[in-house]
Length: 527
Picture 1 (cartoon, helix red, strand yellow):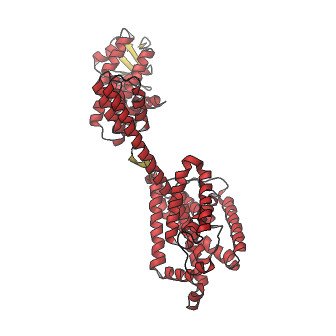
Picture 2: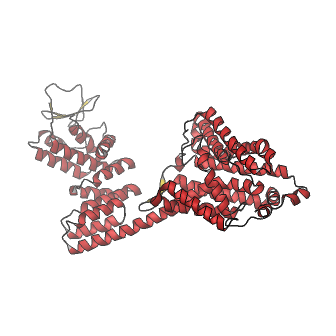
Picture 3: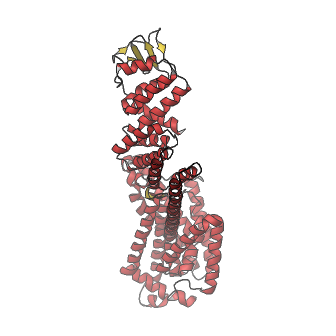
């Protein structure tokens, strides 16, 4: 239970020093004549808001508080302390009497310890204490909540405390305080605060408050609707960036040579496993630098997949140029071979690739919407890779040669361009980009031998829809398919959404075989 975790965290408040309570307060705890008087004394102590008092209250809750004459003894596990004098007693006297409590006192102690947790030294303990008070409905804690709010610096704890204050004020008998509560709750328009307002509508008798409740509910609904739309857009961008990374390398090889490489997904998988190997190395030999293992993993994933792509071009694709059906079957067989090799080395089970600490968590863009850091990082990574590929193709000699071979292989060869060497380099480049895709995908999903199988069809859909060999078309197609998939998933489910997208692409290609952007050169002639 949440309350139990809060009470456990209050152990941090207990110190080995003598209690902050005065001797008079200690004697009142030890000699209270009734449960009511004991509860009153506990409430008085809690109202002071001194976290040093938690040690005594916890001892009373756990049955570790004893009385003997003028002495009030606290059993601290390894020692017994006289709280009045602050001295350590050799052992618990045999005639000491345990201070017993009933359920009413126990509930009061639990609430009091949770309230004192608002002043704990650590933000996680204060946050847990604030959350435990959200559903308590204990209006007596309002002064303590206000005091905690006045000194709180942590934004998340402060936001939770505001929600607690609003929830407690909403049950106030004064209409003015209920109106104030509505304004407080609207500062954080979450589904929980909406539920609090909805639950208050039925028992509310003041007409002004009822109007304010209705207006507040509508305002939260609008905010949640905006958050949902922005979440859809962000999810589409995130998925689109993944599709772009997966399809970018395929767009180069398919556009250059017209080869349907069914092993492209396995090049992606090799990049993911290269990331896992680098992470394992850092854990074993460089644990202090584990937070930065991705900086080393990205280039290694690129080189590993590029080398595999070059081997694939030399031994599988090159002997079958001009025979598309045989090439398709051969690369499919190569994909199965890659999968079995990985299974033999790493096993058939998924391996763990953990996010570095700086990619864990997320940023709260608005109430009801948290953008995960790992998704933001992948979007930024996809943009960076896209820019590098564009610069490579448009601003380097290698890119010039690749574009020349792509547009007209015969003329390029006649002008002295070594087209077989360009084919090999292009295949290595496409494989390396797939390796970078695998490095990125390892941060958001499971890494296993079949990782690439789930992206090969999507990659071809992106390339065909965007236009063969067209970088701009690949970008637009990836972003568009990502948005459409995320838009359809809430209504049709992930599988039906993908089927609907595939059906749309089939119909689109029937009408416009060249895709969004018409191919140029050899690809256009073959079309």
